[in-house]
Length: 69
Image 1 (cartoon, rainbow, N blue to C red):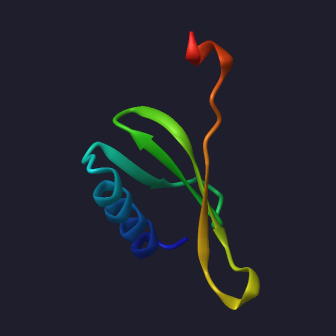
Image 2: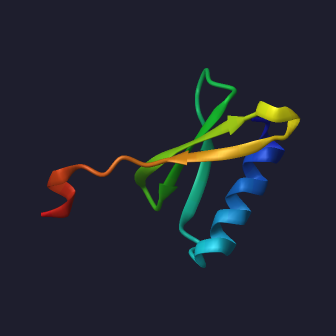
Image 3: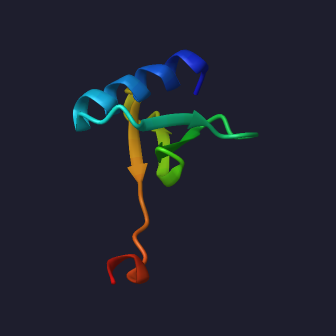
């Protein structure tokens, strides 16, 4: 992902969830993904999917059992 793509994803997620604290940040040494934060808390990873000649994005978020307590 280049910087412009990360900015577009950042703006999209802020609008979608109506939350200006969401941040999409490039991952060091990785070109196929970016990290997603709310404020300073890491919440998941956004991956690029180029299958079927169409670019899309997959968001992966892990929720630990201890987070639900």
